[in-house]
Amino acid sequence: MDAERLALLLRGDLLPTVWIPPAALREARELIRHRVSLVWLRGEVRNRLLAMLARRNLQPTSGKSWLTVRGQRELHALPLTPIAVTIREDCRALLPLLDEQIRRLDDDLRQRWGEDPRVRHLMTLPGVGAFIAIVLVMELGDIHRFPSAKHVASTSGSPRGCARVPTGSGAGISVRKAIASCAGCWCSPRPRRPGSRVRCERGSGR
Image (cartoon, rainbow, N blue to C red; front, side, top):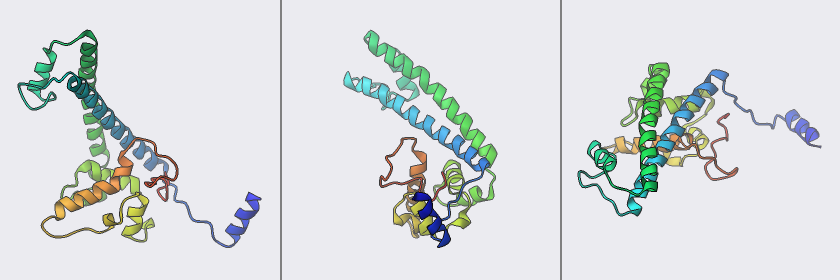
């Protein structure tokens, strides 16, 4: 029955065309998403460390944050219970490793695609750095497959406002927010339920 219905839809030219990205583009997306997942992991490790200290009502006296150089020195000398010491040392060992891996991936991404004309063009927008520009180029793929800017925003699961580029004194901040929103669903490693409001799969070929 399904095959018969598909045949009828095909005969009537009613089946939508699905864009499948080339293998090289799929590989590039994997590298970008790997970098994104490491950034999220680093944030989770930082939050776990700070939450452990907050539960003990501990605040740095040498600065405003435990994550500064002074804060790290104070944290290292802080007298804690054995379990808290284990959490502290594990988090402090992971954070430099994640920082180094993220820096290495950033260098790799810039070396591979930093000179791409599309990336350079996007970076002329106020507040758009190399990474966001590379994310947009790699995730959107062939931009000519979109008939309008609204279709681009719809594909990324972004609000309609992302299809409008504002002008005026606040244009830099507004453009940054619009582009970050368009790239947002591509910069989250967390799985979403099928049919949820933000639909990354539709029309993206991923």
